[in-house]
Image 1 (cartoon, rainbow, N blue to C red):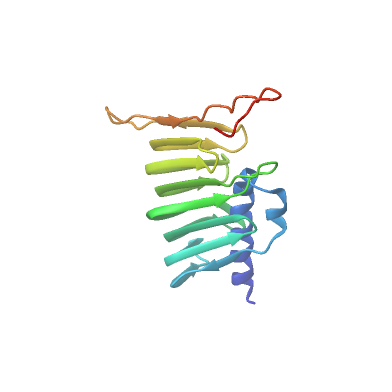
Image 2: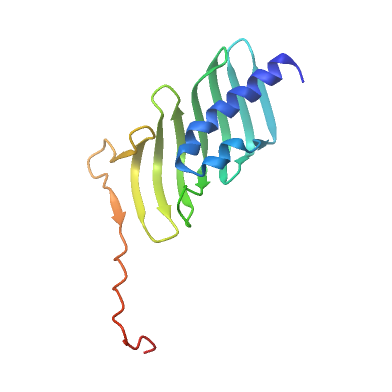
Length: 176
């Protein structure tokens, strides 16, 4: 493997590690697999572009889209942009038995801010029925905060929260 190939592989490892904060800690120790119809790696500009049915996986982390662009300076990752119709994200959080899902027309990850921005019909949900939809969702990984809402008048945030199951009283018949 050439030095340039090694550097780009290192940048991709650094790119998905912070996103793994959403998921299993063991994901960080897994190999990264990338598939795309084509790849362009430019050492001079620090931009790598993967096009056509892009799939990235690392443990439980799965990213899929049409184009993934990785921006870096030296060995430092600055930004990743994943686009698709929709671009998708799936990962199993620590201490959880339900996967976290996200989809949007465009996903942007900013390394310095540890921030992910979902744009264009953004949706985040878990298999347990919790769902969050907006035209724009900003997730701060370091503070575990979500902000949502578009800048256009009429953009609305939609949240679905499932009720907690009622505790069963002893001797209660639930077969009806």
